[in-house]
Image 1: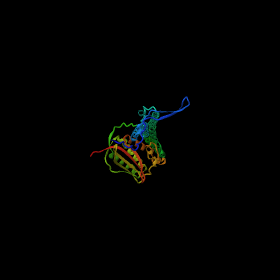
Image 2: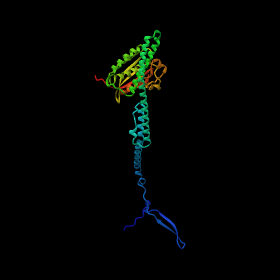
Image 3: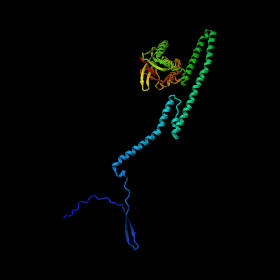
Image 4: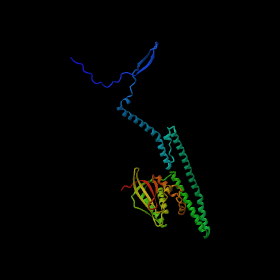
Length: 360
């Protein structure tokens, strides 16, 4: 006969399988008071996210990752046009007056699109003003050539008829007329280069040979002033372009160095190669032993008519066009120009040109 087992210890209380109770006091017609108790149906269970802690972190990670992707895409949508606008502004500042934002901002109908259209309007106005300035400069230079030519003829006749006492005055007039002719010629060259109008055919230019010819002529000119120009032996490279324009660019840089180097010193010219991500570059360095240039004017010396010191430039005959012509000629050949002050004194100008090595 099985005996009943004694009751064990009470287990944990079980959760009621019903909803909450509510009580309401009720008065009967005979005056008695009762309490009515009612059970409500079970309510909805809490969401799994919060009822199951082990799934909370993965679910939050999914939400954060989704929000991050959406924020990234929104940021790209808002900032990409602004970055492109900044790049276009830098191109405009670098001289590319044809840059426009219409194709990039054409689908924008918000403030960003308005900014792009304002930029295009500004670029068109700048291009129009600069083109008008260049056209005026070119036309005036052409018009001045005729009266100067007649003035030269009149000077020649006056020199034949005048006595010795007028020779000094007429000689001074002739020198000033020649300076005007040189200035007008340089203005015409600069206007043609800035307009990108190079009618000469592209040709292969052997830089070391070209430098040797230029340095030889420049050294002959410099020795009459008690100075000299030297060329360090260099490797041979081939550049593609126009020989006359490239010769003019290098000559202007070397003559500028001769003008400002100290008496008894030499202008040093070197040619080296430099490997860049864009390809091989030839680096032509022209270093003088003059007073140098203030740091704030190193880039300004390549602007037309810029003078570091008016009195000094007038004494040396500079008009501020030689380096501007050099920069434009080098730019048309795909190169760059830059100026640096040497720590020991003097100015160094570097010309970088895309080249190919000469195969042995």
